[in-house]
Length: 538
Ligand code: PEP
Ligand code: MG
Image (cartoon, rainbow, N blue to C red; front, side, top):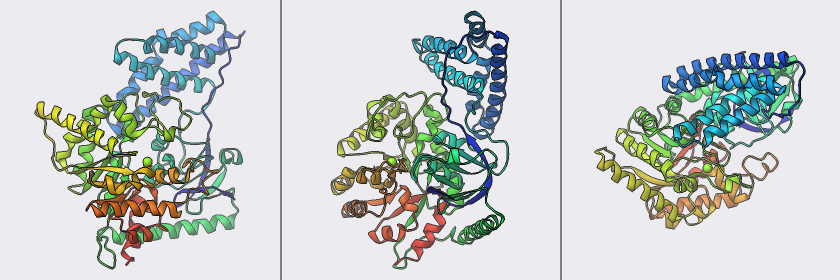
């Protein structure tokens, strides 16, 4: 039995597929059999075409024609004689291996496109990079992304990026396991959104299993059993049944309003990453959206979403929630969330570096697109906007100023927005928690981001399985900071929510309720259990 960190609850039994690391070693070798190298290239191109056609189909279904069009341009690149034709020529002329030929042609193209004046053309460099990478992985016989053929598949990887996780086909993938990561790494959070069991931080799971192995995943205990015997298999089949039965039982609470025994009404909301996730929150009886991680709108694409695209996404969520409160967080990129088209500086400590509000205040042209979209969407429901990673009042005020600038612009353009938006901050840096009483005078609400608050308070990287034993939500220092935040807000008559994973932690919910938390926001799959626990509370 292997022990890791339980990242998403539930039980799964299925067969392993290992996602190899995509790192490529590209050496130049002189080759004699030129035809053989040309053959490798041809095969890789054909495979790339087949892969991209499939991805395009999925994108068309999931995201509509506009987004899917990106893949048309990728497919066209594969047929471009100046691009892929040049790779073949390179093999012939320089008598080098296919991998190196693809690498050097793509580098030449990248250099040309990246130095172009025209922004649109510069953005095409991302397409070239993406396609070249795909061709090279195919030449090297490595797996691109996570493509799964069979049902009941358990994906095993060193790590999964948030976008890898978002792309998993839930009809086939029943669980995933990774060597690295912690409960609050973003792939773990995505697993909970997708409602598939996951165990992370298993250290060496990629080398402990083989493709095709039968494994049991226990997402509650954080354990994995490889090639189980009949008795164990039956034991876990029974566990899975009773888990599913309990989930069914909890459905009775969908319509029930959450009130403690002493009569305090508490909002139990859902966290979402994509607009379509609202349905899961509603299906699970969520009172609202307590955190929309908008950075997921920016992922899996090769340029930032436009103002209109973002507007449509926010409008969709607000309309679907029919007047229930929707807290949308502005872009929180950096840390473990990166974008291919927004290169960030290499930093020793990205979680302490150039991320979230710091990046947005520095790159106002990016920030303003989002704020304008949010303002325009605000008339379609009950919107609250919050800024991530606020360390002090100045950042909040600067962010509010940018929002006011956007309002003025929209007014000039004759575009409408609501005057009833609430403006709040995430309390996820200890400094903000300590100064909560002061900050509360200026904001409309707080939402405590424990995923980061815990890592900064205890100096324990949320991504590191090695120090996960220190990452303790119930540490007295963490609890004191939470209490300070709640009391600070209440003194000024403001409400406090929590949208970090601790809000859905069954062992923490009674304490948090007692401390006076007004709103809990969590993965949709945890909402009903949280409701049950709060209702039982005094
Ligand atoms: C948090 O830090 O608790 C939080 C909700 O933000 P994220 O997990 O996206 O960093
Ligand atoms: Mg955070």
